[in-house]
Length: 419
Image 1: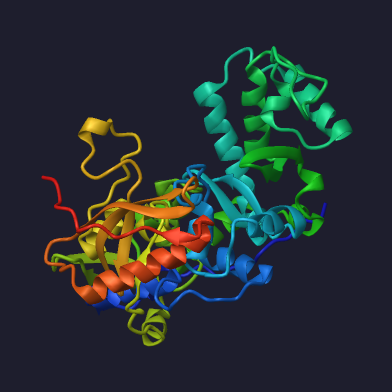
Image 2: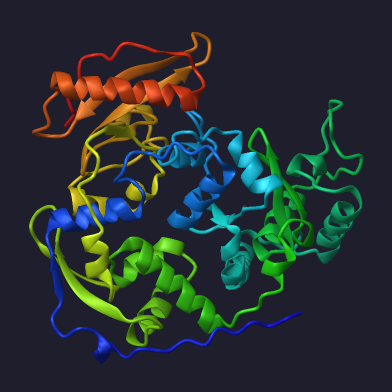
């Protein structure tokens, strides 16, 4: 196996500019939205290469099974590529092998080019999983060997293939085990990198041997721990634009906070200290790449269109960051008891230009072939003007295409925010 080493120059903290660069809140918001591809209107390109490039620019896209309108990963890509449809993911994952699936803060889609830098994450996540749920029964190497041998001989499997059922199932492996250890074993083998997700059917993931999924050029590249940490920290701060040590760590969730702090003392790229104003006018200290002023000069005012984004969209995933930058307090209430919800089960953030202006509960009604708006709320001091409602209606029409329904229902009167 070829071992590829990356030679990097390490910069000392005193190589940072002496005086921090000051950013207004508006500059910070605009830069953040541009780096997350949410400043310009969505691109209309339909090619798979454009979708793959979008995943690359974001770094990763969160996977989620809930399909109130469309599953989160589809919605996130659609928000930036209006021609994207759910079927395009099969091409990205299975046909072209442009992406692979693994675990960051949650299950995510990652560009295939990230794979060499994800080696330590395989070890970290499988160890964490083992420590959390692995018992004597699940540690049985014979079980894991049996699964690997079965996949090698018969091809990709899903967890149901190893579950004994009373009824006669369709498309099930003849070799089935009743022990729940096999579900845990499959997840463990996936997390450690022995298995990879080959494809999905109705969101059910199928595992295959990694050498049959990940192209050789990415598997044969071996990087040191230091090189991987350097890359993880570099790319995090580049995609964030400006960030604290905690935000850098939370971006990939593939390093410890201590590792990030050590990197900041001896960074592999030149950094600059910045101070930006949060939404309440308080000064926040952060780090940025040395070229941040060039990034700012390339940043324009965001499009004024109204956009309904996924609750798992990168621009809202870090709830503390979105609160600081936009004074937008958002949480998803799917795990909140119904009688304690402030808004609803699955409520989407609404963005207009550079502001989060509200939230909306919208669902795809498959029986009536309609995208139904159940309720919507505006933030304080945001008015339900006729122009704003018209823009919301246009966004709902666009969203109906992603939801694969033909019509949009009426928009009710704006709801009062519960206190």
